[in-house]
Image (cartoon, rainbow, N blue to C red):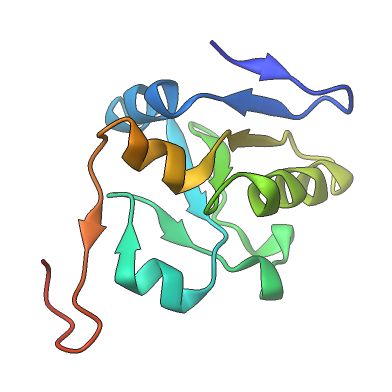
Length: 118
């Protein structure tokens, strides 16, 4: 299911990301902005907004592959390329959280007024 771009970024489909996340084999990094993340997110994803992104600041976990995601795939591809520029492998989820939701995969939704789950 995964593919590799011409510049060697691994692209994973949302279903594959879900399986790997549930198996504890990836560290899923959400590179959207804080407001996007706080209103809705993929369970288990960590927030590292692309606007302040520094690949060197990511948690070091040799046992799990880092996979980036965003709203539709553009920012996560940029983050993966930045990570690769630092000498680390780069991977991202195609289609972002939009494709994840279109496939009926689970998200955590928060009421931004109350801060409580919907």
